[in-house]
Image 1 (cartoon, helix red, strand yellow):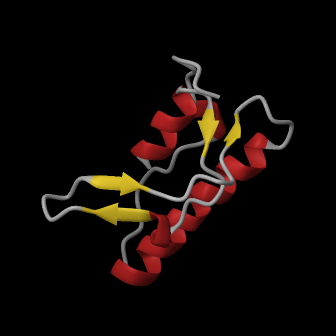
Image 2 (cartoon, rainbow, N blue to C red):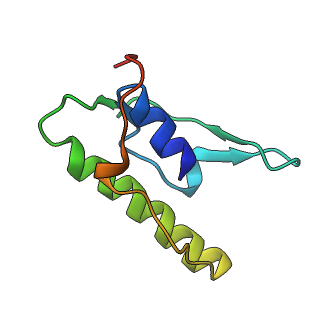
Image 3 (cartoon, one colour):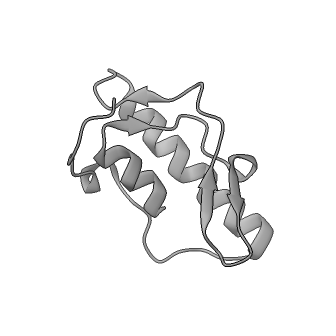
Amino acid sequence: MNLILRLASQGLIHGNYNEFNILVYEDGRPTLIDFPQMLSIDHPNVREYFERDVQCIKTCFLRKFRFEADHAPQWEDVKREGKLG
């Protein structure tokens, strides 16, 4: 979830955030792959894509690990800090 917010803080939404696009090193560090669907937070439908990315991760962790986070990021949590997109 932190990666979703970090990308958004730089002006980007992944657009295809799911368990197949997150690689995890043995020490627990995640690496995000597959960027062709990435879009700017200035896109008119960005909130929908952001919420879909969050829901995909929530569903993945619930299904695979029976884990449900107490808090998931909301669009209102996005604080723009930079501009990559």
